[in-house]
Length: 310
Ligand SMILES: NC(=O)C1=CN([C@@H]2O[C@H](COP(=O)(O)OP(=O)(O)OC[C@H]3O[C@@H](n4cnc5c(N)ncnc54)[C@H](O)[C@@H]3O)[C@@H](O)[C@H]2O)C=CC1
Ligand SMILES: O=C(O)C1=NCCCC1
Image (cartoon, rainbow, N blue to C red; front, top):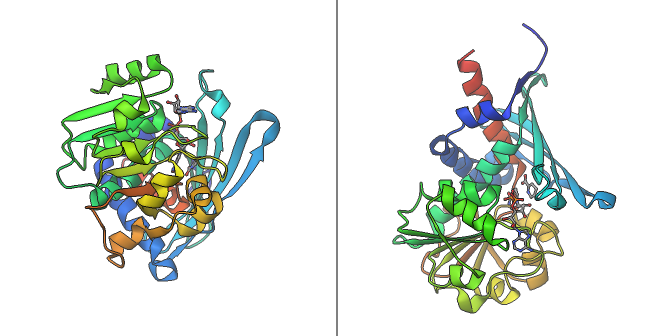
């Protein structure tokens, strides 16, 4: 057998990975993660180093899942300044190993997995926390995550209306011409009355206020991955029931949590495991940061499916 690792490129990942397969494996991974050692997961909080001179960040995200036989690390860069240059703002590779021997199995494109697994994690949160009769989806941001969330959340709720807002109107219009939705001129207009809200932006200051949010709505807050950045106002964080993917990571990385001093009620994995009860009737927030175990199990799924067809 050749010892050369397989490279699985973005187009192949896109072809192989289906939301319908991904959402359940991300749900299980979030549950295993929250069980700690009992869930067979080993995953430190990622290391992120700033590349200050160029306004970028570099992250290393290792994880091991014993249950899924997935051992991997994602290397990811995020450069907000790439917006509008033709380069993506996030780029990544995932390196997958064989846990029984330590052998390098594959290097996979990480951009598609990052986009889809983040949206799948929000889909899991929405499944547990959104009101069962959710009809209006609001998406703030019109980039990669906005698009993948549009797709993933339609697997959870039967939305009758989708609204999109983005600081640059023409970006929201481009989104709306590809994915059926109504363009809003302000974030407030998009948020008021919505049942499920997604914030997927590079905002550094809050873009959503408590008084705009319909009581009982569910918010997936995906951006503001920095201790100094917020997408949600401190009042909104304090008055909502706050969930995270990883408590440890949220206390280290999330400006929305750290600046507001909001109490974290649960990890999404605690809802999956039934160790905490989902409070659907309350206004809920899922503060997503992205955890490496999501990448490891997604990469293993893609690799296994890819090898089946070789
Ligand atoms: N939680 C997680 O697991 C992950 C989170 N992210 C984060 O999600 C966010 C969105 O990522 P992508 O969609 O991939 O990026 P993108 O570059 O494709 O889109 C960014 C969007 O943010 C908007 N935006 C930029 N500055 C803004 C501001 N000041 N106020 C409001 N909107 C603003 C842009 O107009 C654009 O619509 C980023 O913060 C990113 O770091 C990304 C990957 C995983
Ligand atoms: O989980 C990830 O992957 C990322 N999260 C925050 C921003 C960079 C990528």
